[in-house]
Length: 124
Image (cartoon, helix red, strand yellow):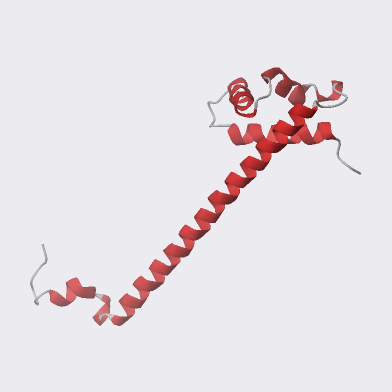
């Protein structure tokens, strides 16, 4: 069974509202306002998609297109953030592996600071 354009648009609007949410003190009408400004759809139309979908027969083409583009942009942003996080994790693993290798090769795992101390002397 295929999903209607109206249901698809309503799902996208809901996902974008969730993404726009800033925290527990954020109000739904403020989220809807910010989303409407970013996407270029009226707040009332977003409200209708959220609460009056059963009364609607279809969705305006311009609204459908705007939501589709916004959702694709959001997915692209998420993908870039995930790729950056993966790159940072990989660099962190490389640093940790390098540090472990240095620890294994240094005398008693003390490193250079421990090797340069004279017995009974404290580094300051």
